[in-house]
Length: 302
Figure (cartoon, one colour):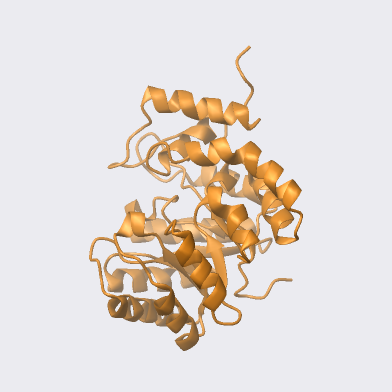
């Protein structure tokens, strides 16, 4: 049995299915979570970037988290996205996620404001306190937020705040990743924030990944992650190479538009997203389909 704050292994950045009119499709969400559970994923992470968390109103956010918790039924843990540009909003989401039964929180750096490192430290401190002791994963994604959470700031947060247990590192800067791996405090876990970097992360001593591709291939992604964690790198590399076209295609346009379109191609849900996101253009659809065929996730034509 994993400890409460342990996020080692495969975490899934859970998509939020929508109806044609833009409402959250809760029956489809239940079905999708069950698909992920059947793939034996280690942690569910709803309401993040891939879950279109910034487009959900507070009531939807709470219900999405509660639906994941109820569907999981204790089979795996749920770390809910609780990020916002306004600190008070992020705090409210943290409290709401706790009340909805979440096991932990995933909190991104605030977007658009471009706070200093001290501003980031104060922001995360207040969100951690609002979470009432829930384990908290820091989420560093400069490409989305325009601010980089530096290693020393992350370490200080981990040392000062008991709830801060890990970082999802999506800077894409492998020198920064190596610094985090080398200098992190004891027990502080490091999760890859980009699927295609998962195996290199784990080879450097990382603890897992928060994966988009696990929505499409949960069982294969879990096998890849645990093969690498257990030192079976030939097996991990084989799975990585097979899934790499999908990992790339998931970002052919803005996430989560491609992954939702892929799930539609796989017959798992409809690909509806909320504005300001829009459907894939036909050329992107073609390339995405080719990637899914290459990975064996859908049959080829003919």
